[in-house]
Length: 432
Image 1 (cartoon, one colour):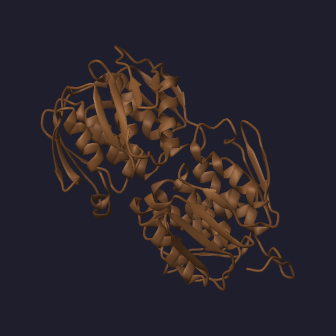
Image 2: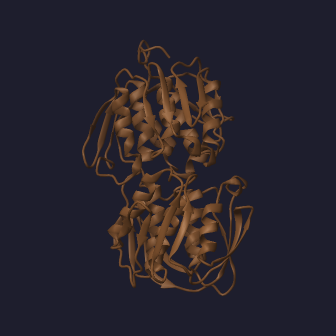
Image 3: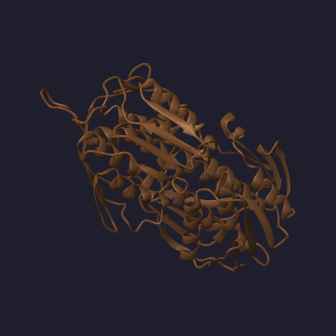
């Protein structure tokens, strides 16, 4: 139900089968590869949301032709070089900003790339430094957007990349590497965060015939003369599935996701193991996963490989016995919001306790009452804290429309699975 101040979440449980939208991460990368191939290419079941449409619009602005059909994007292979400098707006999509910046470096035109005020504060300097090492002419704004790029043929076959704040710098360079003369060797400096997304990029490159050779020093990608993708089918988004799986686990219900399973190439499939460790009933095979409620216990989990799961897992921790420790979450401060601060503030609004200890987030079980939740215009904060409303009367999500960034139909799907608490029926018995 939508109110003047936001969307109210009535208590209840989640029950039923659902097909979640396609993977956002895969859709972004598939569109970049389809454009680079300059051959007829079909992306089946792409995710159409604010973020992916920013990427698609950027490719169109840069001269690449495609058709948006029902449940497919079809790239024709045709390219028309723009006759004048172009302006690209990426909204608050960090993935679009990083991938398109590297992509624009290959284009023989001048491009300006800009985004929202929040996107202008998100780091870009490691990618900027790497592209300048490759002799790309690029003007930046204190290491962030807006950028002006005068692209062409990069020069150089080895580049160091600082991926300690985002793995997207590596992914962006991996996607363009096969189209550089002589290929490219990428040498990460420091520890790579969210390495699962790098593996996702590597897997997609492998599927289209490009091998990425990994050793202790970094990654080597060979130059290719052509790229023939044919059709690439985008699997369901595990991050989107996680909200309903966690919702079932904390609300006394059950949910089965019909288009995501253990065969997923996404790092967020870690949610299956996290839920099982917390005590939920988890049944999964290659194509689907079913989660049913059980009394939940606190977890101690390294979240470095699956940062997008942190807000939802933090909500689960509020309704689990004991104190949970979510490890290595420091880079969440550089997302669509400062997600660490957003989680802590909203947990306090619910009367709960969450705090930072070093690079870890500690979440204590127990909350007192519903409250108005400040989403910080961050889709993952909004969707995660909506789950608290299944257990707490009075939860209202401010700026609920921000879910369109990754999951435009989230509220409709939540309503479809929602089973209200009937008179005399009780929510799960453990203390909250």
